[in-house]
Image (cartoon, rainbow, N blue to C red; front, side):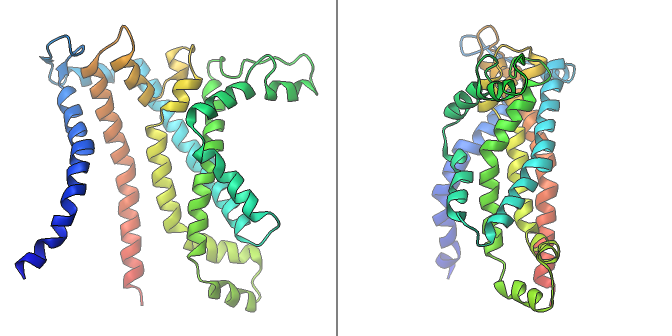
Length: 296
């Protein structure tokens, strides 16, 4: 009996070891390094206490970076997720070319980020890029440096992010839609409900758990986004280009920086920010699930 009791934990040991080694240990190490002034492996770390955090709170670039992350977060929740839900509902109905559209919307998600960055840099190229050329058909003298204009570059990068990830969230919502029994739709249509009423009173309420999962992934992704921003925002002032992940990378690894301790303190604050945003969502999801299970 005792052996059976502990058998499931024995099967979990390999996964827990991998998780501890590659997730928990780096997190703990970041917390430790954030308390030291350390400029890299060639120098000895000196205990700094909370002075890294004190300096970070007065760091203008850090606050600009955090603000940019929050803008990406709000934009993703307000634009990307509703658009994904709309596309999922649209593709749920039998329409011509539904399989082709499903593949087309999801294709950007499986493209390498480097390829996406190169593609959209060409689209945004100010001289003969696709977007500029299309506008010049109407306004021949139009010129605009899409990715090199401070204050605007992050907006165009966000458009690229939406293009890349909307298909992924669309697939999530389509999976949620496939879990709704057809009996609900048939009963509503027999009662005379219109398709709009079915969408508003049946589909959207039953998609709430999927929406919470999608929102959680979108929030975490918005807070830790790095690669596309790093590749598409070079050459701009830090106040215009940085998000937290790119700022942490430049602090720790760019030439002339090498501030591992200070970068670790920024990474710790990024981690805590993600927890503060995600934990309430997960608690709400768990409470909703328990409430549904307890309902007769």
